[in-house]
Length: 249
Image (cartoon, rainbow, N blue to C red; front, side, top):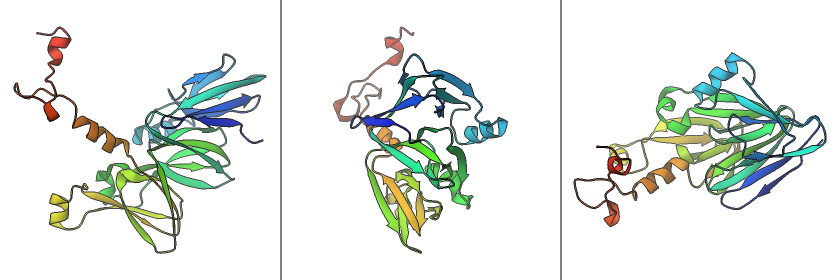
């Protein structure tokens, strides 16, 4: 039976899922935004201590929460936490996709969520988004939140795409993924693109996101007023003494 749902909104979308008897969806603990009064919640380890440990490695919640209704019809909604898109995946039995670790919103209980580690550890440890990823395996429907807009590429066998690690949103398991250091002293020192790039080699489909949350946070931080020895902050911003605001000495 196909899952009934509706994705609403534009820059801050929300997916509302209809629950009937026998239909169970799950999210990481704290992922739910609102639900009808007849929905039951069951917070659990999601597969035992081993799965809890893997989620800890990925920096995710240790627990997951199942949502279901004993009878009748109910709704449960999951809202995006930042500007972007909600992607609905329809996975067949055994079909998998690899996604960035913060993308997962919710899925049917039949969908398996696991971590995915890059085969080449080296630079991956230092590549941020480039090392710890997540694997979703069907059957069932799953929902992801993507930063900004989505751009998809279909890579042919041997075709290579080099991407700033934060822009990699999702790719098929047939795509070879690696994180490597930027070559060239001038590129590292003056390029402004960071130390690492993700290399995606086909065949397979790749989905990129246009506005990584970390880049957005860094951009906003540039304009936040900050205390700087009595001088104005960036762009003439005010100086803020947090201690005085909180009543500190």
